[in-house]
Image (cartoon, rainbow, N blue to C red; front, side, top):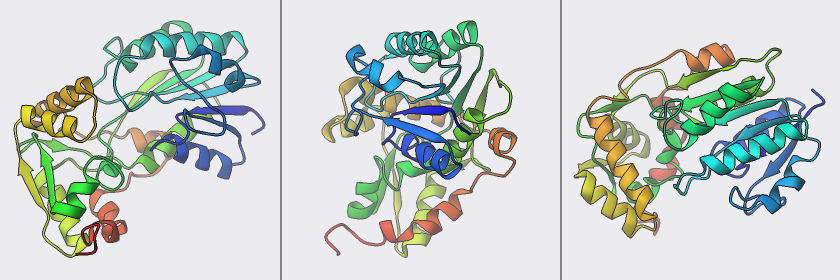
Length: 279
């Protein structure tokens, strides 16, 4: 593969994995991120030209901090197409339909304007527990906070999401559709805590709190207010069953089954084995 692939958000959970897997497959990759070697900011068009030079395909990874960047992403995709980029793979999310807020608007623009595109709509990341918002409380308090009640989620590994992105970026023909990506089973946060506890060798509890208290907890831990409210509200959707399903999206794109949560937990048990101070 000789085409140059741009990976935006190239140091994030999925972006860095996409870049690594593309490189391993022999692709020429350019990594762009706010703090990377090639500075890139969705809100600063002055950073776009250097990122886009010579690019034939782009992985569009929205920033994780919240807020609606759809207008910037659409403008960027339009600029990329004008400079010769042909293929776009957008990271969206399972709760975000085409035309919805955030990435949903970019999804619609791609379908209506791009000749070669795919949209990945993964469920919640397994890595939220190993390198995301739940890691500190697991290590230091042996607890996971959520407002999901008994709701179930088909958690998916960021490695599987990246493999799907690579498959879409290197497909022999345009895919021109969206893919809802899930793990192999939907499980509750009680089950998540049990799997992590078994892997860590110590009990981990799922503390059930209200969506309002969860949003306050996110704000107290540095999340912007809008994102904190959104995360709390998304937990109530989980509680109502919005994520309780599985799909064949990973197998359809990669030809293999996604990793299950138990295998993910066993591979990461050392991360949760003791509090940060070694207690």
